[in-house]
Image (tube, rainbow, N blue to C red; front, side, top):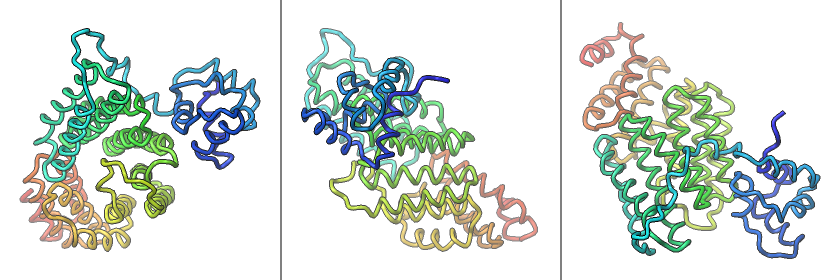
Length: 396
């Protein structure tokens, strides 16, 4: 049998006690009488980034685990069984040691962060084909600032977080442009930056984004595994909006595998955590997560599971109040409504909705809308005896 992973032992036994990472850190401080352990340290142990040699005996007491077991796992410490397996080869963020590197201050990190959010907002209105070039240039520039500049530890961490956020939106844009290989590499780069910075929620967002791409491109089981790893990586301390998003991605992965009950349980968990009390502001990258967006995801999952009686009312309600300037999203959501109508044996309504999908898709440079249009037309092909469908298929 392979050796036990140290991080797995800590995480499993902690959860068996019903403790959060912060609660374990508090217990270690109490036992050791040294107030130097933080939740972030526990996170590093559990994700395989660090093995706490000094704290092994205190961990054994806190978790009621034989010390010998912990020491054996620490001795055999290798790659973490969590998101470490998805990191890029080598260290693409290793600082260059050139003596000519200019000093980089906190303002540089703030500037990169501002450009990240500007890209997010642009993605609300423009498609991947329009944004992929600028996004890739911004990411390359941010990585160059981090690697070539000299900076304090705090500024370096802020830059790493900015690189991770920029990698997430750039990977999303690349995926929308149909450049899936590029997107995967970009997500992995961002994951490396987020984990190096110790930002577990951001790491979860990057992993969840890649999981979503895999679920939609024929790698459904890998998508589910990675979506579940994203939930684990973020932990219970992540903001409710972030946790809701990660559970939604698990729901989608389950739906793509046609696993109805696990998918619906994940949806319920997403709604539950979104209603949790917000003790601090949400990460800026989660600005769009809301109850309305969860409702749309519910409807998409129900459509994927071919449950139109649940999907159609939710989609119609959400689309009635949706911002029509978000052309790509509108086309995508209408595509699920068209398929839900077809599943409900309403081919005329499906054809009418599909016509709107095709019209909107022609206005944006998005591989996602192209692929969804094809799925819709394929679904309607069984209704060729219906005049409205026949006309649509002939024109398409």
